[in-house]
Image (cartoon, rainbow, N blue to C red; front, side, top):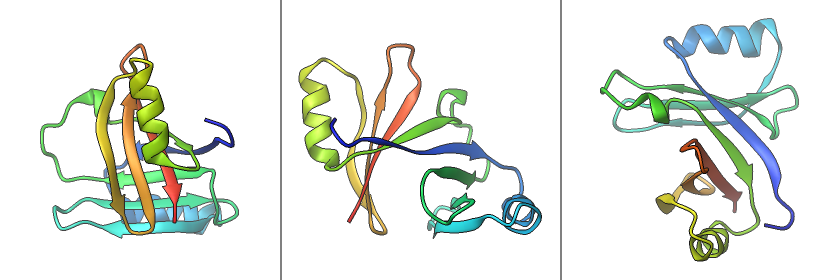
Length: 123
C-alpha cells in the first residue's frame, strides 16, 4: 500500500462535549471532521493542526457492542477498494467492505491478533 500514512486512533468517550472541551479548549486542537449519525453516534476527529494524523473521539450510546471494536487505528491509503482487494488476495480478514461517509471512503480489516484497522481515503 504505497503512500500509506498513519491517519488516526479511535477513542471511545463517555461525554463528547466534555472531551471536545479538553481537546479543542484546553489543548487548543482543531477539528478535522465531524459526523452526527442517525443512530446517535457522534464522531469528531481532532489534531493539533486540524489535519491528520489525529484522534477520533467517538461517542456511541450503549448498544452492547464488543470490546474488540472499541479501539481501532486508521491508515490513510490512496484507494480503499484497491487496498481491500489486494489484502483479500493475501488472505487478510476483511471486517467491513468499503463504504462512504462524508468525503471519506472507509473499510475495516483485522490484523493477525484481531485488532481492527481502518483503511481511509478522502475524496
